[in-house]
Structures are given as C-alpha cells and as structure tokens.
Image (spheres, chains in turn red, purple):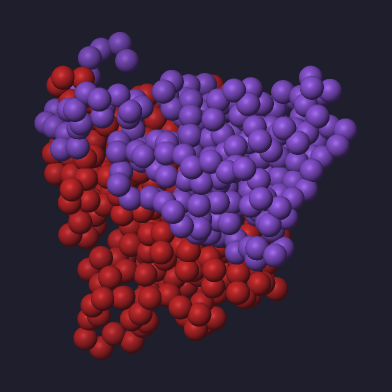
Length: 248
Length: 209
C-alpha cells in the first residue's frame, strides 16, 4: 500500500454549525478521495517545531466538491480551539488521509435489496454519519435509512436544516431526535438518553437485515450497541466509532 | 515536508516540558489520564464458566485452557505505558496477567522452527498479527486485571492481550486464541490501511509509514 503523505490544504470557508461546532471547508488539491465515514489526521506545527496531531471525521461526501471537516471545540483541547478560533480562511492546514476502512458506507446501486441503515449518533459523533447521508443523497440512493440523533439540546443539533431538507424530499429517510438535557417548548420528540424502549421503537428488526453505524461518546455507543444485541443484532450488523472525553 | 511550515498562531497548551516525562511520549502522541475505549463493534459479554483460551495453528499439538486453569498459571504484575494509534498515550498503567512466553512454553516450539508469527483471535472476529520474536523476546502478556480490579468488558475483559511496545490495536481485547503460523497474515486493522508492525516510536501508524 502506498504511503499516506502529509498534504497541504487551504481553508476556503468556515461556518459555525452550533455554538461549539464549526465546519471547515478545505481546498485539497492533492486529495485522492475517500469513503463516507472515514477520517483524517491533522498536524499542527508551532514555531519551535513542536507538533500536535489529532483525528477528525470527514463531513463531506466522497462526491462533494470540497473536503470538509466538522470539528467540535473542546474547551481545554490542544488542536480543536486552534481549528475553530485561530485558523483563518486562506491559511493552510496540514493533513493526511483518508484513514479507517471499516466504519464506512458506500452506496451500492447494483444490489437490489441493500441493507436498511440505522445511523445512531451522540453529539458531534453525527459528523461521519452526515457524510453517509450526504453520499446517499448525492447519488440518489434510496436505501431505507433511520437516523437516531441524541443531542443535549436543539441548538446542539449539527446540520439540522440540511438534514430536514433532505428528509422532506425523501420518504426513505427518517430523522428521529432525542434531546437529553433541554427541550424547546412544545417538543414532542424523545427527551431522554437512548434506552431499550426507544431502540425498540426506532431500530429495524433483524429480519430486515439491517446495518447499524453508531458514533458518539463511549457510554452512548456501548449502551446503543448492547441494546441492539438484545434485539438479536449480530456484531457484523453493528459498526461503532467511540470517542472518549479526552479528544482534542 | 520540504519547507518549514508553521501553523500561524498555534501555541500548545499541553506540551510537556519535563524532559524525563517527555521521553516517554512517542512522536505525534499526547498524554491522557483517562482510559478511552475504542472498538470497531459491540462489546461482547463472556461468562467465565464458558471462557476458554487456546493455542493452535501449524503446530503438532495445541493447548486449551479454562478460566480456572488459566488463573492457575504463574502471573506477573506489570506497569507499562500504552500508546493508541488515535494519538493518546497513557503512562504507568497497571495490569496483572500471564506472560505470553509462559503460555508458549507449553507448546513444543523448538520442534516448529518455521513458526514465525502469532495471530491473535478475539471474540467478535477481531484479529491482529505479531511477529513471534516480539512476544518471546520482548514483553507481552494475556492480562485479566487492570488497576487491581478484574478487567471490565469494554477494556477487553475477561482477558486481553497486552503488547505495550506496539500501538494498542495489537493488544487484542476479548482474547480467545493464538494461531501460530509460518507465513504472516495481516489482521483486521492491518488489512484496513494500518501498519503491519505498528512501532509507536517509529510512528508506524499506517501502511507505508
């Protein structure tokens, strides 16, 4: 396999998605493409040569024009506050990728009965799942897809407008939110952590031959994956990506 | 890179200036005090009365141990630094377990000189490959206690492999067996773009590094 080389990209646009999450749109001339769900390594270099690296999920679909990353600002983080607060448009950012070949989803138009998707996200764990949703929409794939998105409050839902626009045009795409800490007035959706009853109401059953992707904080991923196993999902039906509190 | 690139305005908040301490953090890593959990699928639950560990492969005679038999083997307490390819390093982690060398002593390796690789198999289908010389001459264990307590399932309990001198994906959780083979066979991550050997001090994260 050829080496994953460090390459320069240029920030062309930055947009706050929520009070703590920002999308960086990059011009990446050396980028050779990726699959939805993969990530990149970012490397920052200080004046004295000190370097720090962290991994970030790719938010853009393989078929989008630009490579984009959606980054959560971690208050005491080493890299993320630089990306959200310091890096300016026109400045360069060094990265390499794509990385990760397991937590990925590819539209396969040739298959007649593709596996229905269950995408479960906690907080900024939604980012790689959004890349899958964008890819699915870009290629006109109509795989039945349910998204269960757990966020603390409605203002912390990333890409909400785009998501709801996609769902309004696509009856095979269902979005279900649960707001665990703060709900707007008249909120009719879930307002608790993902539990057995919620999984029972939202998840495809095993006879649908589903494929689940779960991404978020460790506790959410552990709990959702265990609940899916209780309804007979096998480990090959469940792909997970966990992040602990120490990100960066 | 050819030019000396600087990320304008990047000042680290986490850098370690204590030299002795810094020496223990491989390139591109940062220190964490937490113990993050990373697995590609759900966490399997294992009943101890059904747990077994076996050694098989291209050898004349293998080995199969129950949980109680495993606990009878001579154990060691070890304190080591661990390095995850996702960039975190955790210093001074404390484990208890059986040295892989102790397990392999039960196999007639001298009569099988062509065996060069150990493939670790874990519950759930995960595999990882390690050169046999690494587990014989360096340090590797099958551990069942972390920080004085039974190893929890999310960290690989009841028992996991511990190969601290390689990136932590080599330390397979939920270990079930070792397959001893002549030819190398890339495992789960090694087949998905990650480095075949994974030395953190050479920063061998991905294929070609």
